Length: 125
Image (cartoon, rainbow, N blue to C red; front, side, top):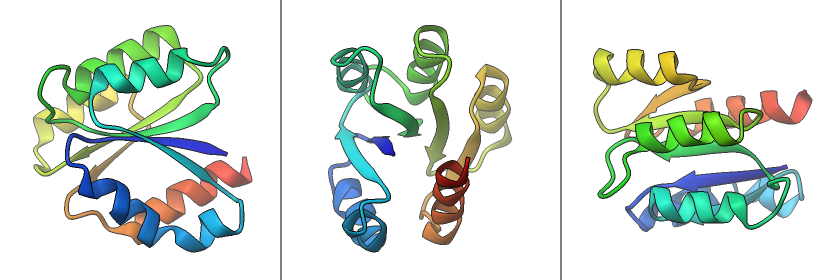
């Protein structure tokens, strides 16, 4: 199962790889990483149908925001699940993300036990 993490902060890649190394090593999951919304769309469009089944995206990024990316993904690739990540747990972003179609909403610093639970749900479906 392939996941895509979208965040303009490059250290997020190392964090995900460290926290989920067992699942990656066991071949349960794979990750792609994009450092902008535009790069994420390019990854999704590079394979038809896309290999990615789930996206974790930061909300606040330069250029295309995570919420704009969410809208594009939901209109172009409606079967891909998207969860949003924000440094701010504000209700306005949460409500907007859920209304657009986000599956979940995580706040920074990330609690990887909840991320692992979400990934496990996807693996089991």
